[in-house]
Length: 376
Image (cartoon, rainbow, N blue to C red):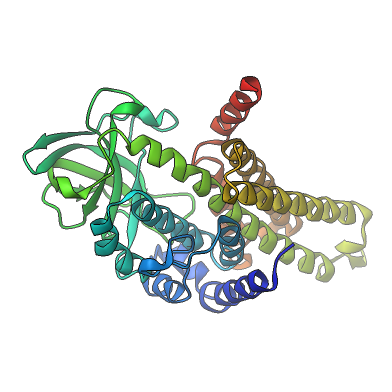
C-alpha cells in the first residue's frame, strides 16, 4: 500500500521516535517536560511543515504521508507527536489562507520551529458548539482590540504564535475571523498549566485576551472567514490525531504480544491459552481495520473527495475508539504490572483517552456522519 518513498519516510519517523522520543517519554510525562529541543530536531527532518508548500520550507507532502508520519512518531511519545500535529495545523492555516507577506514573515521560522505555533478555537463556554464563542475583536484604526478567553490550548505560554479564531461581527459562524497573535502582544496572557490525566509532555492552559491589540495586518483572510478556515483544518486534524492513536495502539499491542509470550502462569506462557490467542487475534484485526480506514480517509482528503469531511469523521471516530480499547486490552494483558508506570502501557491509555474528545468529540463525529447520510 505504501510506496518506496513512503516506506523510507515511515522508517525515518519510526527510527526517530524510538531513538529520540521513547527513551525519554516517561520522564517527560512524570515531570511535565515540554521537549522543545526534540521538537526542533523533528523539524529538521521536515516534520514541522509536512503538508505545507515548499516555497518557505514546507515538505510539500500529502495528508496520507502525514498520517504515516504521525502514526510512526506516536510510537515514541503520543503526547509529543500530538503537539506536532497542532503545530502543523496552525502553520497550515497561515500557508493556506495567509497573505504573501504573512507567509513570508512566519512560515520559514515555523517550518524550522524557530517559532512554535498553537491553535486557538475552543473557549470555556464553547466546545462542541464552536461557533458560540464569546471572544470579540473590535476594529480600532489599524488594530483590533481583542477580549475573551481560549481554553485547553496546547503550548499556551510557551508557543510564540497563536492562530486564534475570534468574533468580529454578528454571533455565529459568519462573524468569526482568524488572527495571528504573537506571544509578546500587549494584553495577551496565559492561565496556569492545567493538571491533566495525560498529554503531560505539552503544556495546556487558557489564552487570555484583555484589550489585546493585534494589527489589522495580522488578520488572516477577510472578516468572517475564520470559521471556514477552522472547519477545513479540522478534517486533517482529525486524521492526524487518529494517526497518533493508531501508532500508540500498535506500540501497546507490540508490548502486550511480547509480554504474553514471556509471562508464565499455570506452567505455560499465557500466550498458550486460547482465550489469550483470541484476544490477540482480535486486537491485531482491529488495528488493521483502523489503519485501512485511516489511510482511505487520508487519500480521500488528498483527492478532495466530496465526502472527505464525512470520511474524516468516520476515521476519527472509529480509529480513536478502537485504539483506546486496544491499549486498554494491552494493559489488561499485563495484569497488575500494566497498572505500573514502569511498564509504559498505562501512560499510553492515559494519553489516548483525550483523542476521543479533542478535534471534535466522537459524539460530534456521529452528528457529522449522520448529517451526510441523511443529506444524501
